[in-house]
Length: 251
Ligand SMILES: NC(=O)c1ccc[n+]([C@@H]2O[C@H](COP(=O)([O-])OP(=O)(O)OC[C@H]3O[C@@H](n4cnc5c(N)ncnc54)[C@H](OP(=O)(O)O)[C@@H]3O)[C@@H](O)[C@H]2O)c1
Image (cartoon, rainbow, N blue to C red; front, side, top):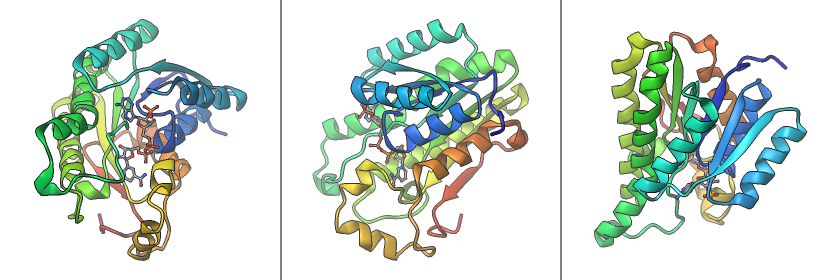
């Protein structure tokens, strides 16, 4: 195994399961020290144990990112561990539900819940760590978007809105900080084999049938792409959205 991320510290939000865990494992396998976050201490500690068992370096910080105070607390705890030298930020955590409210029935409270985790947290974490990265002369931010942020999907107005906002955050920060050595990109996965997607039951076959390749992603495949984007192999790649979707969107 190469060590493309040796001597780097990565924060991966929402890494107690699914894609975030896949990204954390892939980055640790390439030599990064990985800070995992999420609400579930049990799943977070299990993810760290698996990384350490495989020879990697990781620690878990429990954090529910639904309030400004909790996000500020997470930022403080990351700073304690990194001393102002976070190299890689992966904004992966998002508010996910298999039963979103009908568009016309969504309440302001429901919208606030989604936007807090899926938009506000990536923006506030970036605001905290990107200036530090710029001062250090290097850094990478990877925002986890979605094909739903690129194309229209029925029944997905709130989620699609949150993901399009994340895609916009990438483009704005990439432009503003390119000259400072900070690269910002979006990964836009199509349907990916996670615990959440497994809850979709019969709807999964319908989803698979519209993917030109007929394949769902695995979290490890998203992790491999994140390692590439975080590594110096991608030194001149910034502002882009990498769709990993079996041809679904054509991006
Ligand atoms: N799976 C797909 O098909 C797919 C497709 C396109 C994009 N994505 C994107 O990929 C990312 C990961 O999705 P996934 O499918 O891997 O979902 P997942 O397995 O449900 O993982 C979501 C992660 O976010 C964390 N999280 C959720 N709410 C949180 C909160 N309030 N505070 C802190 N952490 C929270 C969860 O941790 P705890 O439960 O421990 O809090 C978990 O680690 C999301 O941004 C999603 O939009 C997924």
